Length: 125
Image (cartoon, rainbow, N blue to C red):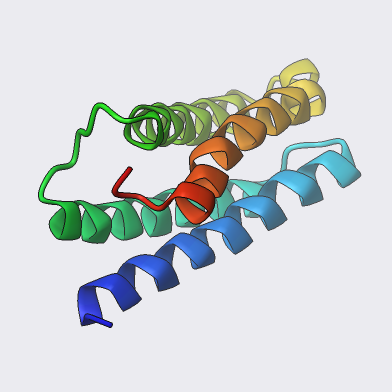
């Protein structure tokens, strides 16, 4: 097993752990907090690192496969999610802070699609 593959697997799994903790902690607490945001950003960075390593192995960052398309959508959603969470917390909009968990859960579910498809079908399909 190559060191690049080990890096990819490690960082994708770290991303899963970080992002899941951030999203579900927010959901349970029913209020967006700064530490949730830190987990969103850390999950995004880990996912981007793992995806970059996988793209080195496959030879392309943008593949026209189911996994490639959903993976790119998921990374863009994660980025939008983290940026929007940052804006919500900076603005201190109480209604958005209290309801943000609904959006977080949606993004997390979408993010799981390429995570699971990568495990089931392999990232090269």
